Amino acid sequence: MWRHRRVLLIYYLFNLLAGVLLTIPWRGTLKDFIGSSLMGGSLAGKLDPHFLIEFFSNNSALSDILMSTFVVAGIIYWVGSLFLSGGAFHIFVHHTQYAPINFWGSAANNFGRFLRLFLWMIPVFLLLVVAPTAGLSGLQDLIFGDDAYESVLYWGSWLRLLLRFLGIVLCYLLFDYARIYIVQTGERSTRVALSRSFGFVFGNLRRTITLTFAVWLIGIILLLFYNPFSNWLSDPGTITITILFLMQQLFMLTRMALKLTLFAGEVSLFNALFFSK
Image 1: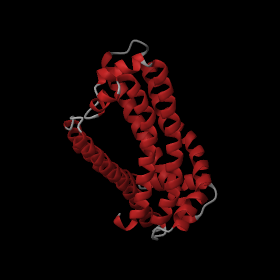
Image 2: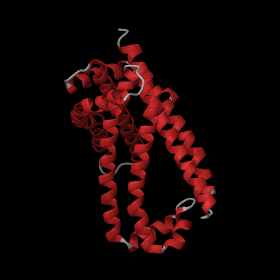
Image 3: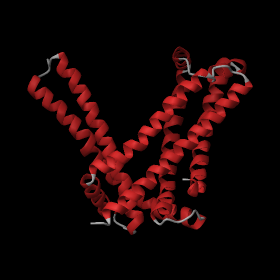
Image 4: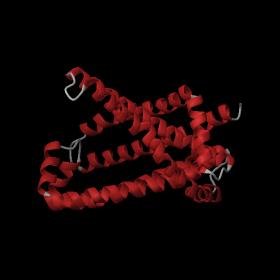
């Protein structure tokens, strides 16, 4: 990944900017609520759930504004990430070093097709996520009626959760490999790209899922190490906050490296299996 350190830096700076923009309204509201002297103590270490409940219950109007801000910011962040992915996939697909014309040109060139592809993903989401869980609920009601056993309700809820998770994972894979197909072949039709992605993902389901889960598992392990250590540093002093900030930046940089590693792994897997047929 060090070979593509400029791409990694772009992703890191993009996430840092998004984090700063989200922090500003939250910091201002928190400062008005408890004052500057107590704000550091509240932000250092793990968040107190009792404090959060009190904060949102006493600032209902502001909490609505904050939630709206987070939703809008989330959409903007997703659009920005989608835009950058066009440049990142181009670098990995064509095995080139970072150059502004390659990265930003490809990002702009593929952005419209990626947006159209996302629109095609909406019915796919309904098919893979919504339909199975709704069908399972209907089957449960048909067999057991409204007065089902508690064990049936319990295991039914877990099964629906599992189906949702698997459906979301499949949607994630289909979207990624369709984008790779678009960048690799220059395909203009997003419907064709999605159909090719369907064939590739379901034809190589074990390998595609294993690759994705392996990278996700590394991220989860990293989080399990990072979270307790950051909670342990609860002193609101300058040195502690500085250490926390550096840890957060290192954690964010590592997450972006894992994201790009997954992109590169998916491209390698696609090239090895799709064009070998």
